[in-house]
Length: 265
Ligand SMILES: Cc1cc2nc3c(=O)[nH]c(=O)nc-3n(C[C@H](O)[C@H](O)[C@H](O)COP(=O)(O)O)c2cc1C
Ligand code: SF4
Ligand code: SF4
Picture 1 (cartoon, rainbow, N blue to C red):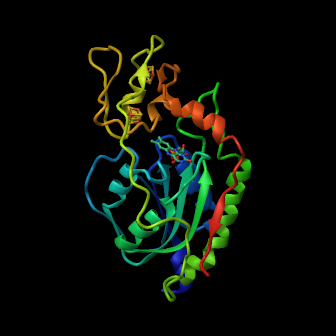
Picture 2 (cartoon, rainbow, N blue to C red):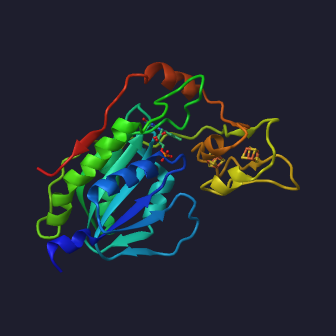
Picture 3 (cartoon, protein in one colour):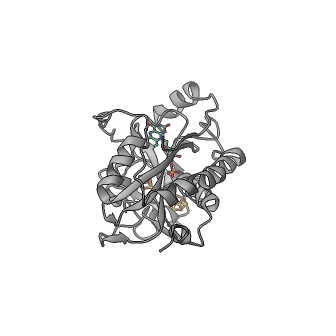
């Protein structure tokens, strides 16, 4: 196999309840311009069959939850094994901070058999953003997507070289990672606008929502991860999540942050 063959295929793995991580992964893949892209969407994948990546390179994109990799994303990634596959890591955060998420993702993927080769922290509209209290509304925007495509292209030589020389990729973050915060019991609710269409049931990554006899959706608080997929994908704006974090983040995280990119030294 020649070095160039490495870019014959890119495996795109992502967990993306509100679609921003998916958007970034696809933009970076465009820049990498491999001849073949295989998308592996772990968002609503409740299965546990192993996933083996045996050829080419990979891009892994996950959201930041509480300064760490979203726990369910990590859990789903642990089904994956890779045969020394060079990988570009992407964490997507809602304009607050990504804290220890990049080092956590890098450590986990290394354990699974990947070779971390380049990394980016990108901004996505915050899951808790609402039209009256926006947080990073509309991100990724055209500038983010253009940076992501360029980043993919700039990552190519490192992805190609990683098989012959293991890269040293310094990343910001602490070990041990930030402690995981205790979740609050609050979950999204459905209002009178609800038409019982069932879309929220389909997009929920954990199967937390059920609808019986055409009635309003019921949410199991033990399964809900507060990802807000149901809120953002509801076609009737009937699903709401009232959390005090929306106002806090709207007030404190309004400064436009730009993506941060990391390459081997
Ligand atoms: C439970 C939860 C915790 C979050 N914690 C953070 C955080 O610590 N820092 C941050 O900037 N954004 C945080 N976010 C926002 C997400 O990282 C951001 O909206 C991301 O774009 C979501 O990715 P997705 O669209 O692929 O689901 C959090 C979102 C949720 C649902
Ligand atoms: S997606 Fe919205 S309208 Fe449809 S069932 Fe869920 S809450 Fe109701
Ligand atoms: S019910 Fe909870 S886990 Fe399911 S989509 Fe809504 S916020 Fe996410």
